[in-house]
Image (cartoon, rainbow, N blue to C red):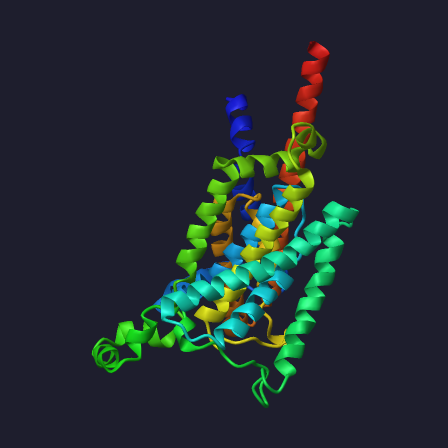
Length: 376
């Protein structure tokens, strides 16, 4: 019985679930100390999400960029790299999307494909720069990606301030053309036929016209499945995981470690850039915004990847959880006056215990190996 419990506790999913439970307990304690009833707060946090279709859709809209930036960080983790540059890569992808999408006016589907590819490559090259500096000169990726974040942030601010790009007396750039929008039924809902139909279907009208519902969440889930396949079902995936486990052994086996590092950071950067591009094509104002209005999706990716233990499929669920917590946190702040920072406490505790559980697993495995060695 004891061995079965130990085996169950050693499973990654069990550790993550326990970490989430502990996070909610910590959040409850923080609410209680602040003078708020945890039961009422948590009840409002989650019932608010399901209180209307608009709220559920809003959570899904928040989930899309969190999935992709989480995948970016998780993918880099597999090669032993800590990509803190998701925010900068996200912004570069958004910049590329707006610069191209504001000029091109191709047929809708083709326009979106071109914009997404350009954004992926631009952000990928931005990420690959950190990978190159790591592979060629041994400069730690944490340092370079932090610096690149700030470069991207201030480049974004500079572009928005330019007369030909920024809209006068606003904190936005010019928007991308409507043919590049990925909103659900984008053309139909604004057509005379669509408007006539929606006028007799108020519930559908509220969803299509009252929210930024778009195809981004579907694309993000497909990308997560594709990344999982790439990591665990391809030779390239095997190589980068081998580099992450032991660079020296991987090099001895004939794997080009430096190339793997650069390629990993290119793909990781591209994933964050894809999030930026889909955010521009799928949500208002379909334009760049200044630093003060940046939502921080790139930094959210670190939390998503850590909570998912770097599992690509796990990133889907942890991104959904994070988005739900953030949405719910803002709700209890507006309705109860409870501090939304409680959500940050919960997330911090969850990440902490996931990390601690991983550390204990590594220690127990080392102890087992030593015992086997001594016994042998």
